Image (cartoon, rainbow, N blue to C red; front, side, top):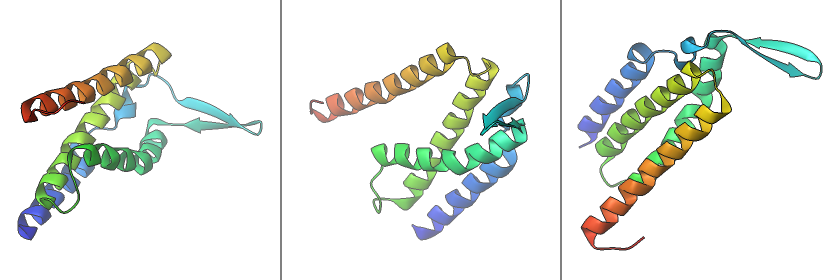
Length: 130
């Protein structure tokens, strides 16, 4: 079991590092943020670096909805990879829309609706109510 976990974790790391694109490359311009009157230009590379610190935490939390630590570590690692890919895709869609408020709200609402729908389906199959 531990060996399978290590294989999936390695594949996941390789996918994150070498296969997934920078989701911010879809931006048509750099983002400028002003802090204390000092403008900071955030390029797609810098935005990706910042997101790289936040995205794993969010992904880990989402995986925790579907997986309990210690059950089957390889499954948890696989779910992490899948949800990380999904989250990068969602960021790419938001960047494609230039992070317009309507796009962010729509994508987040649809994403949450998918989680709720999946929970309802899972509970109905197991005979429980939400």
